[in-house]
Image (tube, rainbow, N blue to C red):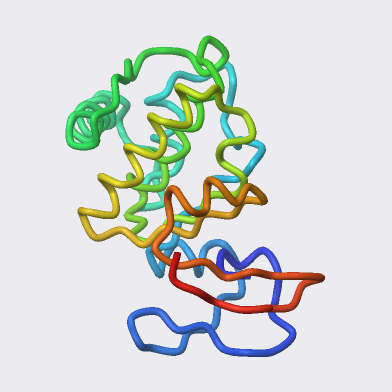
Length: 174
């Protein structure tokens, strides 16, 4: 719902204290919301730079060389080791997830939704992801972390909302 894939049955969404109506992912992107789906949305035969160029904020395909420069800058800022010329099919699941997060940041996301982000990760990949998310949090990002794993909730979150059968049970500080 927050990313515009589904319409809410009731309630209101507020971003920065302003009520918003999100009808599509385009609306969400315009509100600086990014989403990393459980199943990645990357073009396997393209490079990292080409995949990110496809989601340029301007709506136009950007020159790949410019995108490479931006990827290297963002990678350094967030502690990733990314080769912009690597093809997606050559990357591990953890590396592909990093590309999805970079895509969202590249689009201007300040609110990041992660759907079951650890389901494809090794323990080392999970530690690296959590480290990156904490760095993003320090830089002012809001992160919605969707998981069924209580240990991850306690490890990574400030607050948790428990849902049961599609209904909010309670929101608590972790």
